[in-house]
Length: 144
Image 1: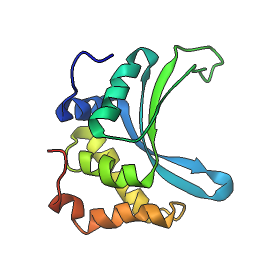
Image 2: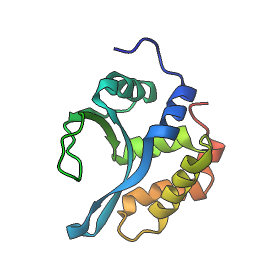
Image 3: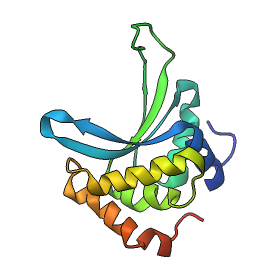
Image 4: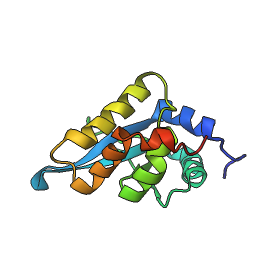
């Protein structure tokens, strides 16, 4: 259980350190789906659930036992993966648009560009890129 409500600034700071803008790749189908991922120790499950609630996402936090590449068991992990077009287009991108600093800002920009230019990304997700290029997210800031 969280001790207090999370602020937008707190969530952005948490993502600067722990979040990732990436793709779920399906090689057999030659398909890459944009994804936002937040993974932390399972002891922080309530914190990740607080992020879900603060952002108003319709997503679930998964807890799993992590086995390292060396075959050794690691501590349990909690993970939020957002791949749904509506959540990405209407919540994730507007929330982080022009709000990140440092390397995470570059990762976010590269992710948006990859959404638009990668032929493996489904056409429906390219809407995010088109909104970005047409200045929609700049003109319609959310979550300030």
